[in-house]
Length: 460
Image (cartoon, rainbow, N blue to C red; front, side, top):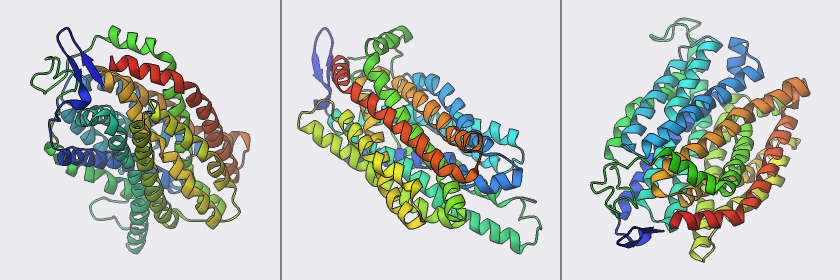
């Protein structure tokens, strides 16, 4: 990437890095750890669908609102202003504040006993998590040159699958422990927690670690913003220079086709992914009689292995294509992965037994994960340095309001209102996830040419 002013031309990829390569990867590792933690807190509710329904008398739609729309509304509403803040303030401090908020809200879910209380607390989780990724994307982009960002952001994005997998595996272990412990006490209060249900214990146990781990962010140094330091706008490397909103909107408008097709294409991939992630536990229990505390362990391991391998493969493939002169390598990789998902993602809910379903699920999760590091890298590549966090926030707004906000609820709607049979959840998954992927493939195909043009404008 080149930066131009009245006096000099700078090639940002040839600028001497501020920190060693080892330290840069350490920063990615720390940010990935918190991204994983955020997904544990975000996805743990998917494991607890049936226990919470039984205890609180909730419907599928109400559970989908707790797991999807309530979180997505606050995540998306606050994501854009927090992204703008990340472009002009200390990003590390913003992330630390977010970690404290979402961890506290998750912990408090363990004391909630009404749908309304859980709804408000899940909104709080969304508010806290909205501070993380726009700032993290921007930090990573400033630690790495463009030809290595897809790999770096893919490693960060591994947090999605490590966190979601840990939510199922660790959550299943905690749920089993809580059920046994409460049963052995014969209904007596559990320690100082009083009369508490096993699902509430799980919320408490997954929320507290985030509060204890926030200190790790003190080891992350705020990098100088590439393009600003070289121009003299960021001499101290401590913060950014706010870009007028009018200028941001003008750039977005000039590049609307590429950004629209990218953002909405990834949004429909997210709709597909969140539909499965939220309802797979209920699917395995209802169709294959696999209890959450048993299913969660194996499903979590599968999610961590397939998801982490998939997102890392996507990043490596994109960087390999880029090194061979393919300008739109990120979008090509995303399109290949999206098409590859279709036969496996449509097949796994329809398999007659659990073994075949799990066999189909591994390539489903692998190909579903491949696009997401590349998608984040594509945003950094399309946007000038001073607009990256804001563009990332807009991207996260779109993919979460559609993916997390609509995906789980769409499955619940088809199951309860269209099929009117809880056992039909498998067909709801096929319709929602398969339909989302087909729409995404069309949008991503349309983005290929305009994406390259947008990257050229951002570089100049």
